[in-house]
Length: 206
Image (tube, rainbow, N blue to C red; front, side, top):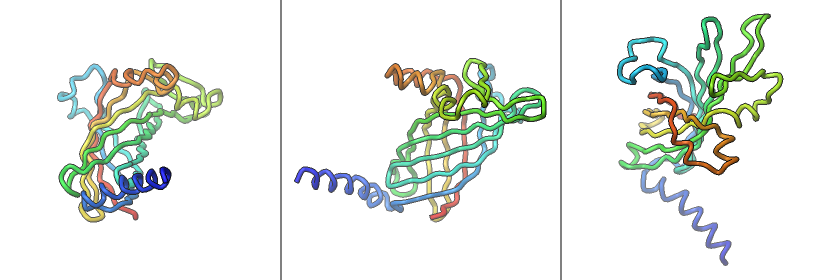
């Protein structure tokens, strides 16, 4: 009896946000967008005219009721000749605040920076916090995830038919995923290193 009640409660938790928010229970979308990401030495409002402070990338997101998972990819430049990719995986809550028109998105995840081999003389590596670099041949991807910084996000999203628009503020923490989980010090994730303002346009796939 207790198990049946628990299952019923879970089903109601999944269906209620869709019913109240008048939006689909399931949404899988593919999107692209721009992100304004100045370095730590630049005042946030003063670096928008510098093209080096802008990133352009894509994302894949999936939402079941109010639970959402996102994968974002941004090509980046590291140094004068090196190019790489910033990969951010995020889990979040998508909570309707104005019917189906506007949803509040709050979540957290981890960001991994990978620099592939750009020429015959260089090796692929992971760029880690503190300016550290780890050879991709010596460190697995899962180990790089463990040693990469935590990311937090707060934003607003809207769905108009098959089109979605998301305005988010991404916060890179000074704390790595491994240090948060190993030491059970989740509050360390709120020690923010830098912020990024992101605007993305998404197309619903199903």
